[in-house]
Image (cartoon, rainbow, N blue to C red; front, side, top):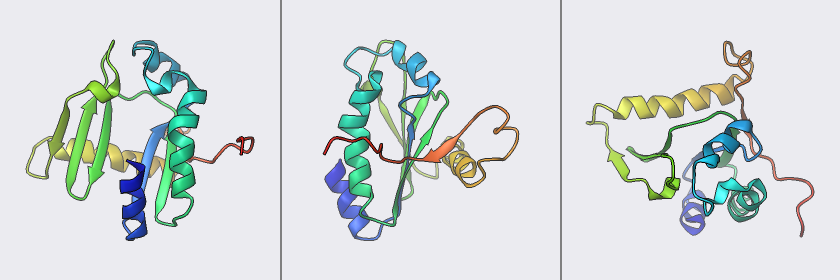
Length: 150
């Protein structure tokens, strides 16, 4: 997937990614019910195999952002152009095993899932907004760890 994203960023396409913080408490609970082969079960593995390579690639572009969030989710939501792809998380299954629902703006559920992405963006743009700050809900830019091996 990285080469596709790299090519899109090089062409000037704006890329914004929201991923679960590898160290947050809700990550432990969510991955407690996924099979052991799920990449995010081990935060070190998830950083090494997923986030660090993505972040190194994204760092070359001003139009590619990676944000982390620290709360549980039931769906993975991706918006590419005007299509939203939705994958559900379920006990005993990896997120990548979910059926992928592809929705265009004609589907009634489209606005619901588009709203999820807008909500994340609003948390990133206004990190001190209430009631979310009091509930310790955070969406922050992903920063590569300083102690990465070279």
